[in-house]
Amino acid sequence: MREDYLADNEAKRVAWKEKFIAEFPKYRTITYTAKAVGVTRMSINNWMRQDPEFKLAFEDAKVATLDYYLNILDEKLDNDSKVNVAQSNLIMFRVKQLDPSFRDNFTVVVETGDKLKTLLEAYTKALGS
Image (cartoon, one colour):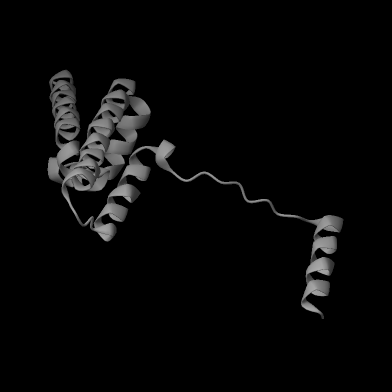
């Protein structure tokens, strides 16, 4: 009897995972897709940690979603005489979330100690203080 219960739960979990992967490109966020499928975000996070196949399938779904956004941007650039900058910026934020390689990369250097003191003295002198 317990085995039947566990088997039923595993079958439901497999169905939810498959539905989540299939629906992710449509809803485009983990939270909205989880809600549409009928599971919690915490379940998705647990599946990501515990099920390498699910995690790999999710990465594939993210790539499909990324392609969706990149296609929208390409269509706008190819077809629109006026590109809606606000909409394009929002799309790029989503693209950067889906694929970190699209993020801006820069390094902030913070000077400390004697070098900072020297820079502050030079800056103060330049201001005439």
